[in-house]
Length: 422
Image (cartoon, rainbow, N blue to C red; front, side, top):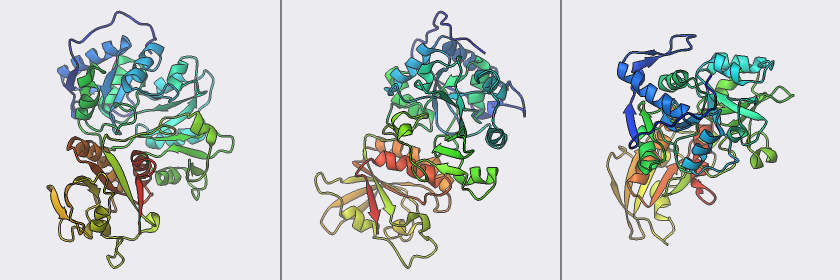
C-alpha cells in the first residue's frame, strides 16, 4: 500500500471531467487488479493516481453515489476533503478498499474478523455495505474523527475499484457534494457543485449511479452479538436479516429499534448528526398517516386529495412553481392525475384563486422502492436546477429500500417540513 508521504504535487491547468465507461473496466472473480480494455482509460487512472499520491482530491463514481476521494492515510489529504465540502471535522469518513487484502492490511495486527462480518462480506462485498472495524495506527485520527473505529467498504463499481487498486491507496470518500446538500448520482452534479468552483481538480465520469443512496453502515462489534444498522442504505435490513438467519431480532436499526445519545453526539459514521441532503429549494415531505401498512391495492380509501394539499400551502410567500416528486400509481397521485402522469409542467388552478405550475418528477412504482432510491437525489438536483420555489415529495413505506429513502427525505425536509396526510 502507498504511504502518506507528500511528493511534489502534479497540477491540472483547470478542473477536468474524464469519461470512464464502466464497461471499459472489469474485475474478474477474486482478482486484486482490474482488466482495462481501453488505453485511454489507463491514462486517466494514471492521472488520477498521481493526484491521489500527492494528497489531491479525485471525484469518482460508485454504485451508491459519487465519492470525493483522497488518501485515507494522509492527514493533509483528508483535510482537503473537509475543506472542499465545508464538512464538520467531527464527522468521520468511510474508507474504500479494492480488495480483502487491502482491508486486512488496514486492520490492527492480529485482530480476527468476527464470523458475522465474514458472512456479510461473503454476501454483500463488493457492494453498498459499510462495516465498522477497530482502527489501527495506519489510519490517522483525522479520517475517523478521533473515534476508535473506522468504517470500511469495498465498492462494486468497477471504476471505483480500479481507481483504488491502480493507485494502491485506500480512499477516504464521502459523497462528492458540499456538506448538507443532496448527494450526487451523476458526474454533472459533482461538476456543478464542486469542480466548476475549483474545489476538486478531477472528476471521473462513470455514468449514473445504480443504487442512488449511500451505503448501509453496520456495527457488529458489540458484545451482545447483535448487528446495529447505523445508517440504512443500499443493502436493506431485510437482506441483512435473511443473510444472518433468525427472526430478525438480531438486526437493530438506530432510532427505530434503539437509541444511543453517545452516537448522536460523537458519531462513528456519517449521516448520524448533521443536516444532510437538502437542496437550496425548500422540501416538503408528505407522509401518509400509516405509511408502513398503507395499502395501494384499492382506491376506495383515498388520502386527502393532492390538489387540496397544494391549495393549502402557506400563503406567505405563496409558491407558484412547485416541484412534484410522487409515485405515479399511488392514490395520492391518482387523486390529482387520474388518467396519466404528466411528462411536462402542469397548470393547477386552486379554489383560492392561485395558479400553480407543477413540475413533475416520477419516483417509480409503489412496489419498487429500489427505483425510488435510485431517483430520489436525481430528482432533488433536477428540480432545484429548474428553479422551483418548493419541492413536494411523497413519502414511501419504510421497508426495504424505502427505509433509506425516508431517512434521506426526513433530513432533507428538516424540522417542520413533514406533513402528515390523513
